[in-house]
Length: 338
Image (cartoon, rainbow, N blue to C red; front, side, top):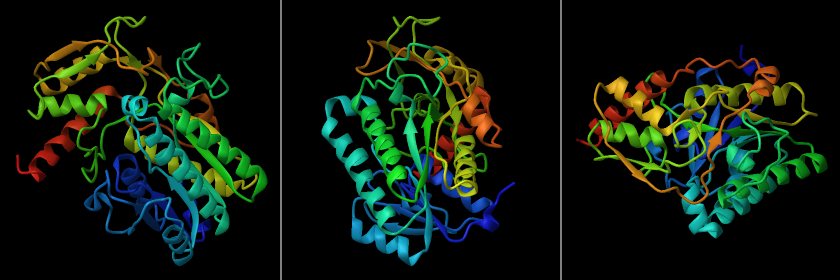
């Protein structure tokens, strides 16, 4: 049950024209929150922003524009999704990630503090754990990123912790595992050109946009030699953000760091098998070597989020995730005239 009536102001969603951000916008709007989106539209799309929201085209590091938007729209909470997310690219171009993820977020947090925004929800990642010693992973496990992407997010978590101690702001850092799927109503989905998400790539292959799907690494110490990930439906993840916001509002003195996953993992080959099942066809698999910065297995222990929030997954079935992703991919193909 939403506590939107107790929330006085608007929610700013940075990166709200992107994949996960656009779903968070929908989740907020659907329960009655007022939303202002800040996005520079470098990787996002203006058409992905629901018309019920206000779009401000700006970089989160543009202090003047961001602070004006906070004031003009009476922003009382920020959900921060803007940033760069491709692990192999972070290895080859680390400075881009420290600029876009860490330095830009430092500017955004400074704007929030300057304008008195009391609540901040951060899009973090399981990449903060690196190669975990234990699976499933709990929030108290060591954070030892093995790529600049994970480190750039961990540095932001550290900033938020320090800022929450020094200023009247609380935060929730949500550590995502592998996000996939699309809005079941077909309102948004993964639209990024050149996306690296496995399920996105697989449904592109299923709709003829790709000839094959690369399988990067067949010699991991896993049940079939391919990497294992905990896949969470993007709509479930968006719902978790709304619940996290309401947790912060209910207790302004407390901050939280929570895993976002289902607590079970699927290998790359198992995911491709699911796509084959759903499409009744066989996706061509291109077996290749491991990519830099890829751990063998990432699976969440989600006990903390289930305890802290009233949130419960609604679409935690691999075939359902694939079906929603496939439906969106077909809709995208129609939009692009294919």
